[in-house]
Length: 116
Length: 112
Image 1 (cartoon, rainbow over the protein chains, first blue to last red):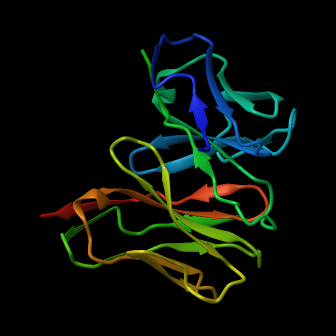
Image 2 (cartoon, rainbow over the protein chains, first blue to last red; image 1 turned 60 degrees about the vertical axis):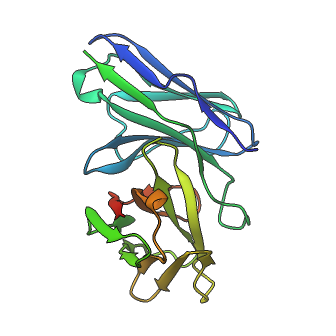
C-alpha cells in the first residue's frame, strides 16, 4: 500500500519560531510537493521538488523554504513563523512526467498548523 | 500561466440523484493529465478519476465519469446514484511535466 506520511497531524507554534514540517514517501517517487490549503482558496503550491537537492518555487513560496536531501523525504521550513501561516499543509508525491502510466499524486494526511 | 477554475463553491444533491461538478483549465500544453480528487472530513485526499489529454474517450470509474472537452478546456465530473459517503470537498487538478495545480474546490453535500 502506497504511503505518504507527514510527521504531525496537529501543530501549535509561537510567532517567530522556526518550524519544520516533515514528509516521507515510500514509493520511490521523483516528484514531491508542499501545498497549503485555506478555505475558499483551494490548494496552493508552495514548493515542489523533482529530484534530490532540486527545488522549484510554486505560487506562494514567500516565508517558506524546503529541503530534499534524500529522495524519500521533503521538508517544509517556516524560518520565522507568523500568524498568517496558520493553515493546513499537505504533502504529496508522484512519478515524474506525463509519459508515466501512473502519474497520480498521493497525499499525506495533512498537518494543521496554528501559529499563535 | 496554467490555472484551474472551479466556479461552484458549494453543491448539494439528494441521495440516489446525479450531480455534475464543473472545472475549466487554461494551458498551452498539448499533453497533460487531469484529475478529480475527493477530500472527505478525514482530510485524506483520494483520487476519484484521471483523464489523459491525448485520450478522447471520457474516463469512467463506477459511479464517477467525466466529460472532457479538450478544445473548450473543460473537465466536469458526474456522480451518478449519489451516496451519503460522497459528501466531501472535490478538487479538480492538472499536471503536465511536473507541476500539479489545483482548483479552489467544490463542497458537495449529499442529503438523505
